Image (cartoon, rainbow over all chains, first blue to last red; front, side, top):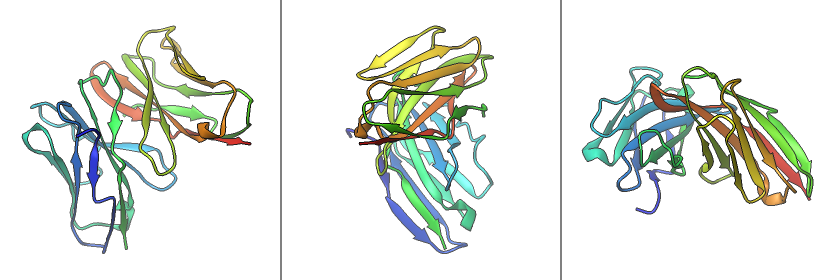
Length: 115
Length: 112
C-alpha cells in the first residue's frame, strides 16, 4: 500500500483480556518497528523486525507482550491479560533499509484503552 | 536504549518569529540522528536523517545541524507559521544497533 496501515485505530478492552494489534507495512520495506506512547511519555521502543533475522525483542515490557511478522510483511502485536498500564498509543513503522536512511514511515497508530 | 534528551519540553512562538531547540544524544558508536514532526491526530513524519558530523539539512523554513562529537543537534524554524505547530521528535541510533531511541519531544505552538 501507499502507507503503513494499522488496525484497529481504537480499541477498548477489559482488564485481563487479550488483544491483537495489526500493522501492514509499506510493500518492500524490510524493517518493521513497534513503539508505544503512554500518556505524558515519549515513544518507547518495543520490538524490531529486519528481514529474516531474529527480531530484537529487547523493548518488550513483559512476557505478556509478543509479536510476529508473517512472510516478511504483516505484523501482529499481541498483549495477553491486559493491564491498565498497557493503555497507550501503539505505533508501527517501517523502513526500506535496515538503517532507516530514508527515515521511518509511521502508521496512524492504535489507541488502546484498558478499563 | 539510548538516552536522548530534548529541550525545551514546549515553547510558544509568535507567528513570524524564528526559533530553535535542542536534541542531545550519546556520541559513542553514533550511527544516525532523525528528526520527525508529529502533528495532532496524524502520524510522525520524517523531516531529516543525518549521519555526518557538521551536516546541515534544510527543508523549506526548517533546518537542522548535527554535531556527532559532542552529541547534539539543533532544529531551526525560520519565520514560524501556525502550521508549524507540532511536536518535534529527535531520535538516535548506534552503529551496532539500528533501532531508534526517541526523545520526549519539543512541542511548538505558534500563535497568530
